[in-house]
Image (cartoon, rainbow, N blue to C red; front, side, top):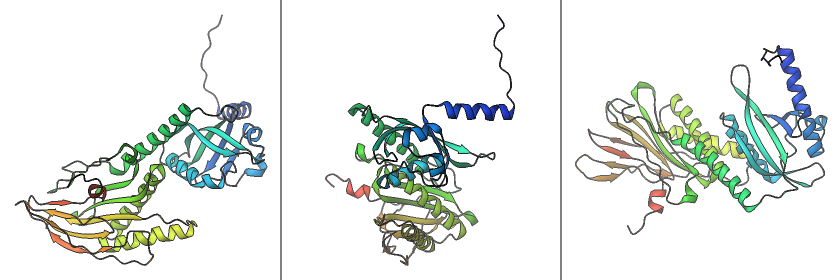
Length: 336
């Protein structure tokens, strides 16, 4: 008997094989772009949902009910970072309006350059077998794991010797187990002329949605500071960015963010600080005394468009420490 051997398939053979697998699969296979619009709808998806490919191509995924749109956007953001998820139990709907308990697994779809252009999802029908309490618990735990992984990327610690003449340390500690995932974020990164940006912030809310929103703000603030390293100006632009996004996206419930920001010149010791509704920074002097920085504490970000932000300047000497913290520190105190 001749043994089986692997042979290299030609591109057209690979395409034909993929086409066969998609059409033969009992699972629904759905491909969407980064905006959530359908670019492929398999025969399995037609059988499961009642919508034909012609009805859905180029449209937002009709499987997602109106009250689940934000959840869907959050999951697409996870995939857009390059992550995958498997076996998530999600509530969806069919064409006739009947509910669909779907088990969904998704992975990023990349172009030839490796850029994520969308997501491919496998959808299995779980409606006839309602999930047990254990299954729901597992699904919630799965989402928590995704959110924790994402949030860890928001506060990746930097090396203490990353910046010349400056030691940096970061700490994130949840007061309660249910608060392990939320909107806290922090970062330290280099700017031009040897300066260093340091900030901590907190988005209202908990869970995956707050963690993803924090990541978006963090990236925007990094961009603004590298264009112009002035804290007050950066917070003004970030507030406009948030307010405009909420208005243009039709978001009726504003999401507020508090943030404390410092731009430090390690060579001179000069630190310029601005605060948006956050706890005031503290300067811990080498001799032992501590002082609160009297930077103007303006409104949190996302409250009012056009809000201007003030700044305060402080000079740090050798072995002095600058402390930026979220209000979780003061809210979690117990007995003083």
